[in-house]
Image (tube, rainbow, N blue to C red; front, side, top):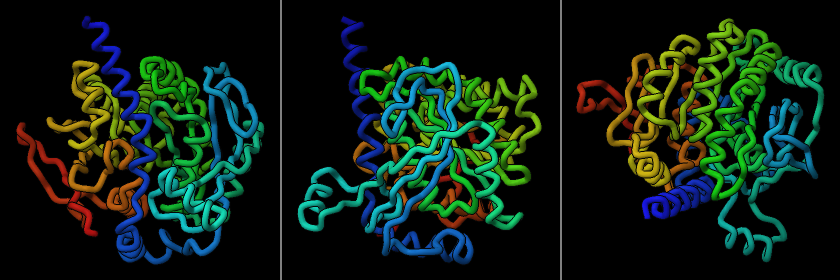
Length: 383
């Protein structure tokens, strides 16, 4: 009986996680207000240099240890080497800040009346050698001033195909207007609702490939800052890779800029043991968590242990800023808010631009945990 109940719970967790990103992405209302705020506070035209009057093609640089490339994507099987390349993602007319596209019904109506919709789509993959990958990033960075050039690396979570990861990476990079290169590391998630346990094994087994990818990006970036966003289960891969990479001195020469830990699906006790790595290697590391992340609530129940990205209680470790995002509009399931909620993207934008401490960022206020530790709470988003 217990085994049956656990299987049902895992299925429910998988269902929540698999649909949360798409539902949380539909943030049409209130986006204009936050776009204006980003333009004003984050500085000049750095965040918002152009409008969405015409379609764009946005390029990302990727590395993946998925096994094989198939038609315009990669499969979901575990491979024994890294593939490198560039991916072109079409950003359609009418793109809404924080969204990868409207609901299927709304997109169907758009196509019916206008012949197109607002869904981001992978347009083309351009695989290349590791050497050409590095040179290509270098050429991209050379288009920006020495003081502003940067790389932002995105590491996705559970039940994500390669194309889904590429689309999300492009949306983040495009909306934040990264002054440099947007990069994606895509570990071989099964891309299946029932693949939660196998995905956990897969991301853990990918740590050496992630180390190699970070090394390659660092070599290409030169003096440019490297920033990282890890979402959900991707946080397990990141913390393992940084811990091993520093121990082996493969990553010890890299000083990262900002590291963002979005809705980490990792045991809180394990996180507290390993999180000492973050202040050693980054200018600032920020955890975003929420009490309305229903996917991680179920994950808590399945694992019988607290997940770092879920509150209460609030997970706080020294040298890492904790931000509770419960007050913002995170959608029905509340797991994809890191890239869809305008208020949170705004906070990320400020950190990438200015590295301001929490007490100086306008969207946050201070709070004290039950243990007497300070953390930060994101203000409710105005509509």
